Amino acid sequence: MSLRSRITAPDDGGAAREDGHLVAVYRAKLLEEIDLAEMSGLATAERRVRLERVLGHIISREGPVLSSSERSQLIRRVVDEALGLGVLEPLLADASITEIMVNGPDSIFVERAGRVEQLPLRFASTEQLMQTIERIVSTVNRRVDESNPMVDARLPTGERVNVIIPPLALSGPTLTIRRFPRAYTLPELIGLGSLDEQMLMLLAAFVRARFNVIVSGGTGSGKTTLLNALSGLIPSHERIITIEDSAELQLQQEHVIRLESRPPNVEGKGRITIRDLVRNSLRMRPDRIIVGEVRGGETLDMLQAMSTGHDGSLATVHANSAEDALMRLQTLGSMSEVMIPFEALKDQINSAVDVVVQLARYADGSRKVVEVALVVSHGREQFRIATVSRFAPQPLGADRVVRGHFEHLPLPRGVAEKLYGAGEPLPPAFGVAEAIDVLNTRQAIG
Image (cartoon, rainbow, N blue to C red):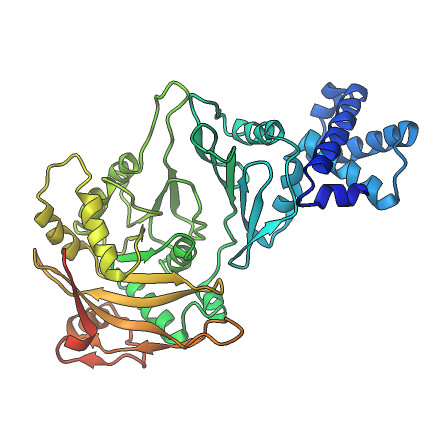
């Protein structure tokens, strides 16, 4: 069996171990012949070129006899092991891959264009996978072992990394690397079919008129991508504070302060939560606050900020519908240590939240704005929303591609008047309802 087939064979465990042994042998030979002090003074690209040249001399001198392609592949594998992340290096270099999922040494999946596929790659052993994981977490001054079996961190290059190892992970060390796509503009999202021109005009009017917007959706539905695009509509002279667990937003305005939470150190101290940052941001004279995702007690602080002078703020929340988003905000707000009655949280949410933008990810990998809903309830009454835009999908065809069209409905008069007062024109596709249309208004039990 050739070196190439040994590397890529998905079911040949013995060949993978043999290949891993060959890589380990030549990695050791390489380390014997290089000057580590000299290497540390070189740039990354120069370091790779030097290692490839030295390894090529070693293989020419000592064997094995390989074809040109096999020789190049062996050199790449050994240098990847010496410098980087081994079998993961080519995956990280592939811009089409948005997520890498390693489920133990023998199972590697990736996501491309919204679709998950398994690759014919594997680590030679659990030990090799653990070495790779340790190399990754060490770049952010973290450690992973039995006493600290879970790590969630952001790499210096921007990727989000999650690690969980045995005994918690029964199938072996599990590594998930999420690469955040480049920032998309709203016109680009129209080109991708995520929304249409009329919906863009409406969302732009909401942001410029300082409506408080919640972007809701499931995992991987594109919440951060849309939040980033919407933030581009904020006037450049405003002071914007972004608050995230892992810095993903890429705002282009000049006056942006980026805050990122911090996990505890190895002694369990020094943790800075999203809630700490939200509270601190209120003392920083923000015009707008953007919270990457609300997950707990910081929701109450965010709601209070939205309803007390920080109009035009944005945040995301995990939820499967617009109604669910409001109820989830209520649940998360109750997780604060402030003893506020559960019913009183309805007043906070009805006062603070103006718009819920619901996203969904479809079976073909596409991500779409499936609903734009206005919160029309008041005080402590049950949550009520009025749908003003929605995606109507067609039945799936043989090609399994999701098709459909966006529908636009009249805006409540109060909302239309608020847009008019802010100098924002009403998009042509939206009329004005004399009263809230009962058919397009839904009530959620809060």
